[in-house]
Length: 308
Image (cartoon, rainbow, N blue to C red; front, side, top):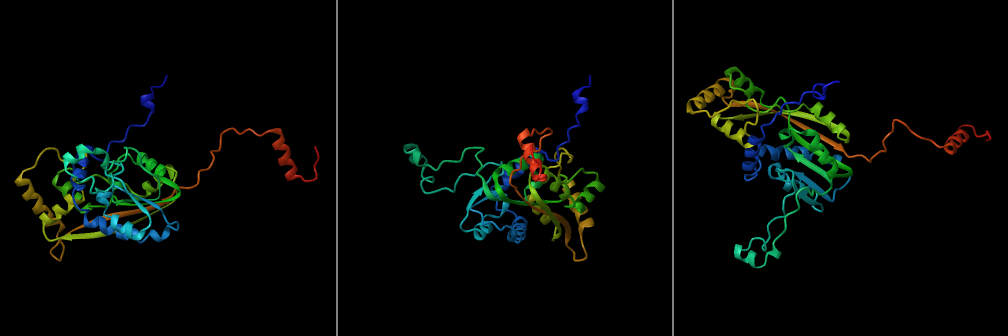
């Protein structure tokens, strides 16, 4: 008898160190969204003309880092914007005067406080917007299943994320110095398109562009990258590094990334994708039963002159 553990394919190792990502998101949720996220949101919004249906509800996935709330509100002023936190849970409504009362006032009449939505109670919407967050997701099928369930039929999904060519120059520097990976590997856009189809989305369209970013110093470059996301690679160098390593890193960046203009250059690949949630279709069974009466009716339609 075959061993089921031997027959099953080996589990894919995780791309993302969950603890490192959690630390990054905790910090990022308390800061303004990175300017790059806001710029990608603006570029992604140029594709909103593809959405013919005017949504009444819009889900802004990972809203704290999306940098898209003002843009989506301006684009759809009549729609209700539903922000989703970086834990994939609905965010509570904005604080009101009642919720901002002193602690002892809330104890006296707690019923007037604004309730937070129940965990797992994501509402459905006609547009699901996910700007610059999909590259942080290791369990892609699980997230796409949630997105599929959160969209209304004929609803529109639109997202952006880093592609695999992001920070290739920095990866080369780390590899040459024997330092491990500087960032997690990102998913190719063709694999993302296939995953959308498997999740039940229709007509997925994938696109990408490469942007060149530059900084005047290694310190400015590293500060920018920390804002975009700290190193979450499972293959990164373990342990703490001291000042001597930082000086070596600064020298390596200056040597390998400096361009003719005297600035340090890195390229990022941005992947864009959109798809629809189609009308459900009945499954075609391996065995289908047809009654004798139905067979006779089919025969009559093919041979109008025949009789029983």
